[in-house]
Image (cartoon, rainbow, N blue to C red; front, top):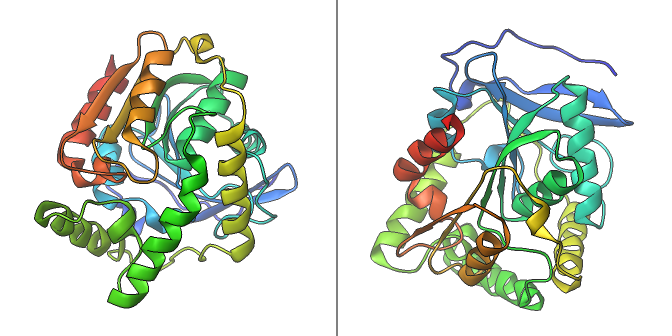
Length: 288
């Protein structure tokens, strides 16, 4: 295991200025960034389908990093990380454990969004001693049903995006209401705030493998989520097109003592649309 350049991390570094680092573990060279105060249990972010480091909302990252040590990374085959994306969420979770252990952490908190929420669930189930608290956003349980629709939904969004010269997330993450359109425009503008040291784009192999993993998870038998005994926060919008909001309700019901937050008039990207409410909620949840 070797580390490459590691600039000093300060409490005042903003996401747009946070340097990208590399670490080798398990035959994979992982790209990652970390910011916020040193010490304590770090919060590890697990990102969504087709996402790389630069797809995290700076307002969410910077807001949480005012009080918490935040770590974001590209899993195997994603962005600047080496290797090929595996075809199962279980393998993605195992790779995430390899990365976390390589950094020397014995316990972490998790924040998984969409596909990352599925990875976070598996990681929590398979490595309970590693996870202190978990936040699952824009996601549902394995075997939740309706997963076969995701390709059609994505294709429709990409066609609309091509016709309007916009990013597909305008249509996938936010409702087509006045409020939703404004939220989408703000979110996309924030993603462009970082102008240097940007991550490598997602590859075609990664897209296909991630979709295959998501479909497999949707068709498999449900996990026994009653085995999750860590404190869990589940969050989503009330009109999620990609992962039906009812699946987030179901996820929360299956996890003993979990807390559910649903943001009104929002979709898959509800936690970004309501970042001003979501960030304080996360900080309060992690402090308990």
